[in-house]
Length: 240
Image (cartoon, rainbow, N blue to C red; front, side, top):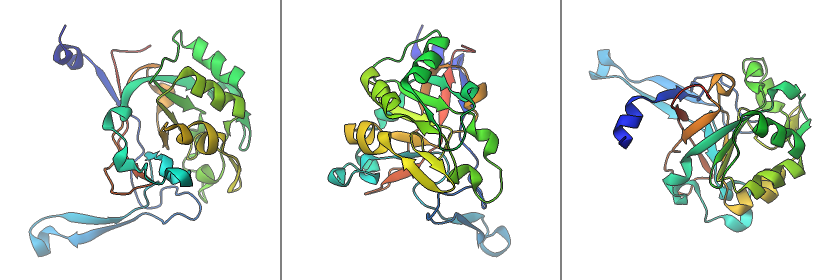
């Protein structure tokens, strides 16, 4: 079977939130602004909006330059795009019912991996479903100011698996948050970004997606960017 034939029978799932005014934005980051009147049909003969948007808005990727000062040259535009088109495995941590500020351990991650019937392989994207999307529309940016995260041994486990990307349905991936305070950042500071492993945050709909497939999430190619928004897609042959 050719690649085209395989693709024609594939299921494609959008796991990105809608970019819209009022969406949750990380504390201290610029709020999203959309000017829907920049160009209008009545005045200009066509419709166009302008956006003021932080690099880490909505579903987005973090480059090593975002959190590792010694890797300032490893910006989002320097990362080969194939790093964002990789097999994925969804690690379902939602049954743990972790609260804001709590951590999933290596044992938790491994148990969720085993439950899929698959194993993380070198280069895979490990997509962490904390079940946090349920809090997305809570007032006062609660979703982005609070989140569970990964214990240090969980980050070490994923690094040991040789993952090529780590994503999550929280705004901070491995970082546990409580009331806007970061409690630890093992992946950002030690295990993921310092080892050249991109992080993707703010994913949506992981809970209903097939467990295994191909992740496609090419970030905007922003010169010197610390990260960039992306449209995250999952491609699968069917429910797994």
